[in-house]
Length: 445
Image: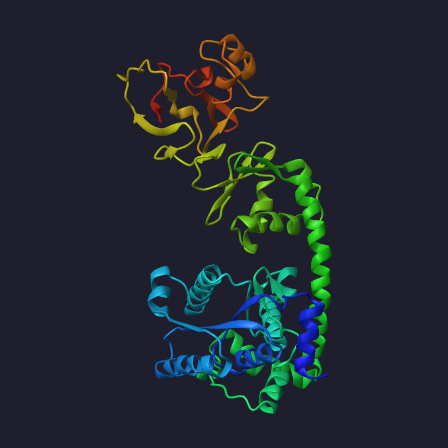
């Protein structure tokens, strides 16, 4: 069966898209994308072409853009082109050129898809690309998902020739007398992918002549394994994760019984910006002191008594907020809370203000937790030497249910030090022996 028939069968068998769908083809001008154009043309699909000029190869980039523009005449389709200042974008965002080009490319494709009501974006990724990707993922340590390789269909992105080898595409191009342009950067081995393509895979073929076929078979198996793996992980997540507002709460005792622990922890935290290398750090939190935490770029995992709490770093809706030191100034659901340490001030007078607490700083331990009230909470109200459940305290204060739901507390070392707006804990009151004072004030929004 020739490549044209194979592609038609593949599109039909995997239900990649329909004859009536409007398609956008990402075309660089290289042989892979030119073959994709010809296949779609011969199969009678309705498509447009999009070409990105990243202005990274001087005259060669201009040549490629002009070549792709001329396809408008050959195929009688609309061709979209756009030039990008890729280097400036990479420098401004402090990312690699490769990542910058990828971001710019797909942002523009998304704009075209929306503007022209396009159903699918087609790329010319093939079997060899998939093998390179899986090998790179294996050595980078991306887990089972990385070994699954490139998806033939991922939302609106479709890769209809992913089954075909580079040799298959070249043979089709020659048989159909197609013209294409060569990207000179594809031969430069300082790029990781090119090093795999030109050095590592050829070296593997010397040892295992059928390495590409074997890897391709393994990729299909890994794709099936990943489905089973994902079902297991989803089952663990459903059992362990409790969503409370904008936070995720995980019971530590239940998590510690989960096997394999590290893998399950990684699959939970990776969705919140944590890396593979942080997995064991998070596992270490299970036996750490309350208040310890690990941070990603976007989130924080906090150990709070018998729970791990995953909360956004900058989210006023969080119900558990970490306060690292007395220099902190935190905005949260009801206002802005500030801390001021007053040292060796024996003449300090405690202000009689509802939303100000003055505490014995020598008895306190950072980090603090600023959080909402929990069912089992208790403290020692100022003036009493015995503990009282907060719900009983609220009854004594004749608070309505709606008022109780808005109350927050400040906690230090698993002890509530201030029920905000109501009472400090007697254990942290200022005495004649107090040397340092911590003043906490709340500004209501």
